[in-house]
Image (cartoon, rainbow, N blue to C red; front, side, top):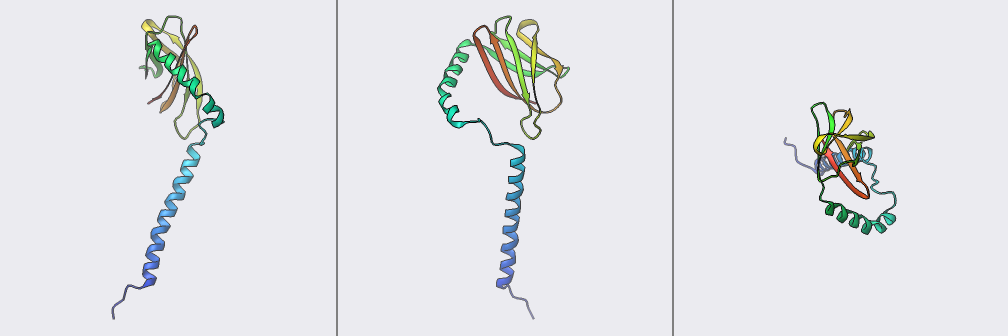
Length: 148
């Protein structure tokens, strides 16, 4: 006596297949909602009204001709190498974790020789997103980059 493939078998195969898909979707949605708040701007209407001002600021920043590179020094401090930035510029950085942990802190950087700026404190290990701000008189330069 041989067993035949019946509609009941097909039902259980489809049920198991769709069950896996639904379970994975719910799992991924739960992980996504825990790691990203979904808020890029507090009020999208207000942000849209400021968009042209952001474009103008970006053009002014580009016209400055300043060049900036971020890295860590041997001791693990934030190192900012600049070209074209006038002496006496004030450099600060906001550090935050790109995902998961919601660590954030603002640090001031001290000027070193030849356009180098260095943080006083050692950065904790791991990945960071650095939002850098350089101010020299009326000139402002902003940059956001990942730092491994």
